[in-house]
Amino acid sequence: MIGLLPVNAVHVDLLLADSAEALAKREQYLQLLSPDEHERMARLVFERDRQRFLLTRALVRTTLSRYAGVAPADWQFQANVHGRPEILDRPAGVPDLRFNLSHTDGLIACAVTIGREVGVDVEHVGRRLTQDVAGRFFAPAEVARLHSLPDDEQSMVFFDYWTLKEAYIKARGFGLALPLGDFAFHLNPGEAPTIAFEPSLQDDPATWQFLQDWPTPTHRLGLAIRRTGADLPVRMRQVVP
Ligand SMILES: CC(C)(COP(=O)(O)OP(=O)(O)OC[C@H]1O[C@@H](n2cnc3c(N)ncnc32)[C@H](O)[C@@H]1OP(=O)(O)O)[C@@H](O)C(=O)NCCC(=O)NCCS
Image 1 (tube, protein in one colour):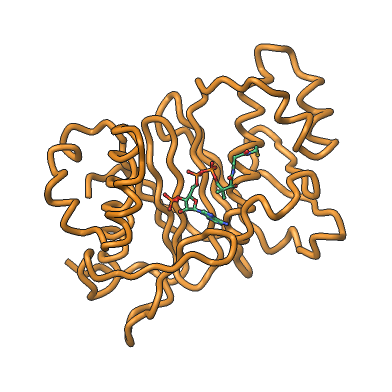
Image 2 (tube, rainbow, N blue to C red):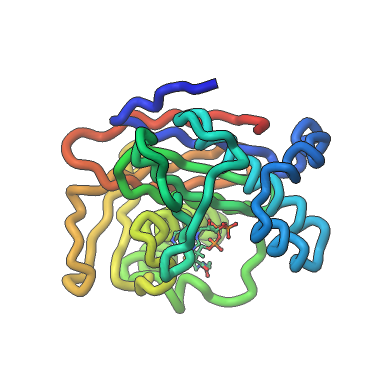
């Protein structure tokens, strides 16, 4: 079925990685993969990783097909120099769909929009960190803010920063080639997060929209969209491809 994604919107489709309904479609999903994706999947050592890889491919392919007359198996992708998959050889008449993927223990997210930079990150907040990731990678203002909080609040706010920072570097398409300490988020309860850049990044905070959510009680989500003018509406929903 072909639907129309409004030009001025962002859709985020979420798939629970242990969904029995999705896992029952394994054979169907395997038909959607390209030869290259089959090879990548076969190289994964653990069944859990292969399963997540398969569900991620099924999610992005079926999601994109909701917005264009292209069958899920027919999409072709190419990674940019920093690893971000993008649509290759967009057929005539297909809108300039942009997407970004994130997966973590139990959840897969696919954000889609048209003609805009978009980045999404999901993290399981039960994840244990063995190193002082914030101290090593976050901006000084973020580290100071974290350390000013009571111990029991620090871990949640850490994931707030982490998911937003990942969403931003993913929207830019650079991944970790962008120094995480060169931009800082400002979080104010009840308000959308804002960002400040070091001059080295040559970016304009006013062009960015950020959003946070709890798609499940244990998963934090950060979303970054570059837009001109007013904030875009964001639709988030749980799906089974
Ligand atoms: C690859 C990276 C862009 C995101 O990694 P991540 O947060 O571990 O993983 P996510 O599941 O959120 O994202 C992975 C997906 O992002 C996409 N991706 C890969 N490179 C990307 C890039 N340069 N830009 C945008 N998206 C990218 C891919 O679709 C990938 O999934 P796939 O390989 O199944 O297609 C990169 O930022 C990274 O390696 N981060 C490590 C995490 C970390 O150390 N964070 C420090 C604290 S902020």
